[in-house]
Length: 115
Image 1 (cartoon, rainbow, N blue to C red):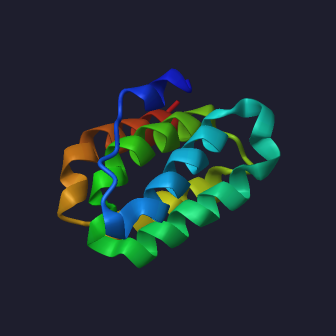
Image 2 (cartoon, rainbow, N blue to C red; image 1 turned 30 degrees about the horizontal axis):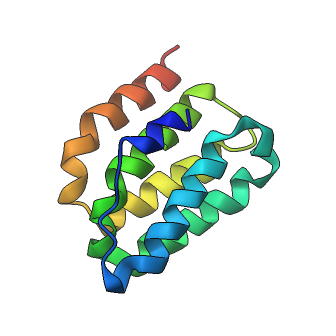
């Protein structure tokens, strides 16, 4: 799953240098099942970054949304609330830009709810 991140080369802007690095590393931790104990804090960190960057976090959506959907599909009872809160924080902060990802989000939710 770490290969997933190699597809995305972030364009580091001076004002987004630290959030870019933070998101890259948070997603790596999130995709590593051996670091499962840290997933709660990673999700809180992602939510915090999204809430504070607001519209500037749009460039991170292609990197953040798919791993969240993968984890939601695992249906981990310990993480599910944090996962939905993180997705909610993204949707609330960038409602116009989330349209590109609405299909994957609704497919995942339907898959989890009705299987």
